[in-house]
Length: 267
Image (tube, rainbow, N blue to C red; front, side, top):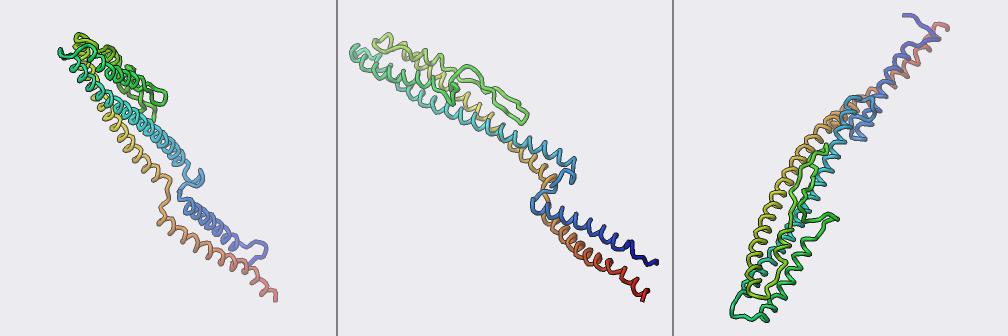
């Protein structure tokens, strides 16, 4: 073994090992402090790209689910108004039948018609209601987002045109009362059918929401496997690198003392 002064290969080797251990320790510390296995792009270039796309899709799933939640609220508002309209139609049918009584005068029927007209106005007003600027009752279907890629399905519209036409008469005489009674039966049938349509729309919306939740949950799990650090495993690595740094520092100090041995040859 040669003994030289200008070049200390032992120190150079110890310094190289110490530098490597220190870099690994720093990386382990960054992972533990951030909770992520990928703290820089060089840690896992492919994994970083895949996880970024997954994270973006997860956020789009959240937006789609929010849209479906709004659509569910929309249908609930529709059903609430239809329920009240159904109650009003029930009363209007009752008033029409009372007005059809031959023992009553037209003056009596005019009194019944006062309530009948108010209920009619209530139904007409309800049919014109909006939700966030969108007509609650329209023949037009609404496009509802169903996935993270912007796919949609059409939610059937609820048309109240015929109902409005049915409540447009009066019960001021027996003939009109008879016509009004038939119209109320027709209008109640439309309301019943419309509420059934709303129920089917809600079933579809809840199903779509559940599908998004399942897809999003599994996507989050996949992204986690790529990005999230296993704290127990990384803590073991941290301890190992910490020991290597300490021992490497001690050995570098020893290696730096080796050239001093040459002085003994010169004594």
